[in-house]
Image (cartoon, rainbow, N blue to C red; front, side, top):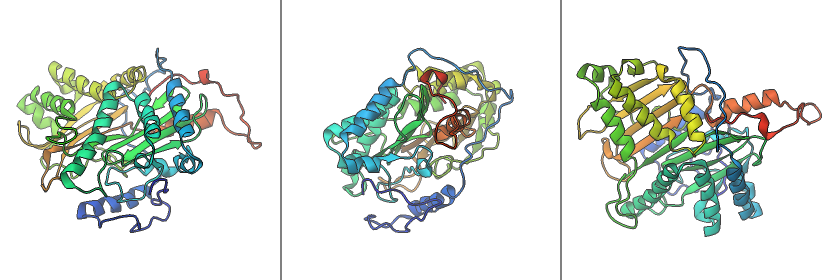
Length: 408
């Protein structure tokens, strides 16, 4: 299976891949149908307008060099044999970027190389990409998601569905100091998309989740994820008055999935929830702390640049809640402004046999609105500035210093 290129969206996609060892459930079939529909649309991105109408200024950040990430990419590629490299390497401007999925390992065809098929040293080289893209906390969370996928195997015994290493890694373009390139990790509950241009970095979409969120026995007993994201979201609602909670609450029935998850690149959100300026002081502080938690998953240097973008649009930020507010029941929340979309959701059981949502199954999502996911906007700007002439050369010479260090 490793190395097979996905064939869906605008291309022919087999209805039942021969490698699928089980028939999809009703929920999984819904996701497959959503994939076909969502990937048939050209990318436009999440839309969120600014009341100020002004883009934040380009920023240069100390310590924002991506030299170590490029080095990690070259080391990973050098560790692969010719066949693995052919499977792992994809065009920078291909639509395959959008073919990531949270659902089970074999439900749809995957692209890239599967970590389960690699030697230990090759896996470590692949994990170095993750380590150089994320902060210490972000890397730990991502690895813990993978470990809890192993715990799902311990619970279910389904070797064909769950494993710590059922994750696919792809390199887009040629890792370079002045040409665009990127990488992706794709698998159950862990999907990270990273686009690089010079020292500019785009790390969205990022989807991370887990079921269960706590390993109560087994190899990783005691491991827990997303406690901070859950507790901070709940604490924000607790800081609001009854009237403000009603303003923040946009529904009572939890969605079956985060709204802008896989295959929902073009989701449109109507303005909803409570506005940042309508929050009490304590509420504003808690909202900023919650946003900082998600931004803090990005590598140091670029996290500060990302945070500057997010803060620039705080006056355009809305916080939305779905579900009851108490200490027991599951819930959903969303934060949206022109620089960031955050979603958090409690889900029904897949590993466990519960049809209603519980706090033991969590999905989180971070996106960059207005066409900036996957570095699409970054690539458009690059091609406008460094267009290729008819002879295949460039109208201007490329230099790493020509690009402001910025994270999106």
